[in-house]
Image (cartoon, helix red, strand yellow):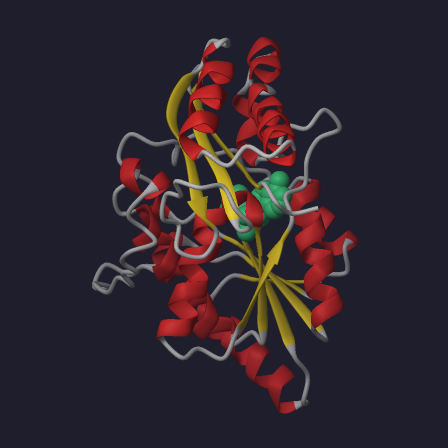
Amino acid sequence: MEIIRTPAEMTAWANQVLADGQTIGLVPTMGFFHAGHLCLMRKAREKADRTVVSLFVNPIQFGVNEDLARYPRDFSRDSQLAEAEGVDVLFAPEAQAMYPPEASTRVIVSGVTEGLCGASRPGHFAGVATVVAKLFHIIKPHCAVFGRKDFQQLTVLERMVADLNWDVEIIGHPIVREEDGLAMSSRNVYLSAQERQTALCLFRAIGHARRRVRTGLVEAKVLLLEVEALLQQEAVTIEYVSLVDQATLQPQAVLRKGTVLAMAIQVGATRLIDNDNLFDD
Ligand code: AMP
């Protein structure tokens, strides 16, 4: 596996691969890999001839009071894991190389960025869309794999490529969970043993919502109250609990195919998100 540190070298590699008539699959990440990241890498390998994983803790998607400085990092472990997955290139640029001082462009997606995480993290999705747009230009992938764990992010990026007529296939990968149901996240290392138990309320909430939908509940208002009550049994602060349409991210009054339960909570100092498409098998 090659480790590439500069956008210019990355593009030179991509141009060579394209000249050879091969396709490129990209997995954008912020590193500190867990099994979820590795599944995305496997998916990219299935879909394209060559696989690039980007590892970049993107400063412009963090708010001023967020965890940029303490975001977990372990480059040598990450590079071993990526190599073991058969990744061809780990692209790990410095922040300076991605955002030289004169850089002044942001990609702004409106609408789908406004609710859910966008409401409490102003500028976050502009940071995400901007870095992904840059990665697409630098790496020239045919497809890019993103996790449904960050379901709003996936929707925002689908919007971006559609709106900008970008010839990149965006592939959504199902959420990868720990055995007890907690969605895998690099940020789970922040949780104490007790917080780790508390965090399971998200998965319990999903189980409850699925059961209620299966038994014919259609009123979103009722389900929202039930889910909130269930979460409030634990020592968590609810940021949002929403039932939204999977494509528009608009709140739904009536539960139906395509309705997603999306949640963000704070457990101690750690912010956790989870979601579930309630009518999926
Ligand atoms: P991150 O490094 O947290 O920015 O995540 C990189 C990619 O991995 C994003 O597309 C995430 O949605 C995806 N991802 C993170 N955790 C999971 C998970 N538990 N299941 C599936 N995809 C995930």
